[in-house]
Image (cartoon, rainbow, N blue to C red; front, side, top):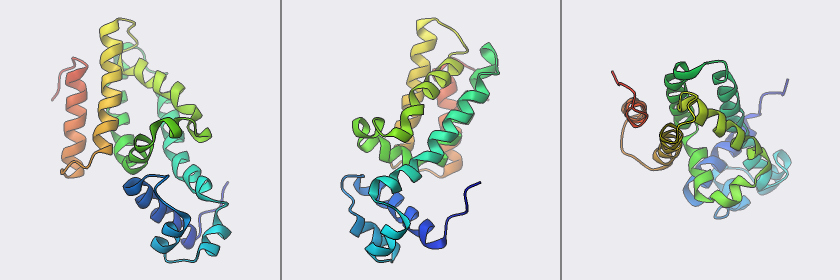
Length: 182
């Protein structure tokens, strides 16, 4: 089991997450991260081999969480998978909204990042669940629209409290998928 990160390591990760989300991965230097984390560049490099190592550590939890959720959804059959897929995906997207923003800011480069290699399979599994396991083009297309729409929405700076944001995204996704909303 990995040891819990030190306070300084956590400070560096939090600073990098904010800066990468605001200025992009390429637009943020190690110096910027060190200043934001209130540490020296030498201290930062003691904790991380470089900027890519920080990015890897930041992107690993969302990639692993999406993979785990997608695997759990494979146990659900047909229409049973739709609502859990919507609520699970919206929840993950909101939890990792800054990481999603980082990925979208530099999408071609980010999709080539090794830690994100699990994403295509997990997204395919999620799309299958969102489509209710249907092979019909309408179901497959609307499933992909939900995946993209939720990701773009959480990456945007929408002025809404988290509860409203979650509710509206779940209801909007369900409507897009042709499901009744409550």
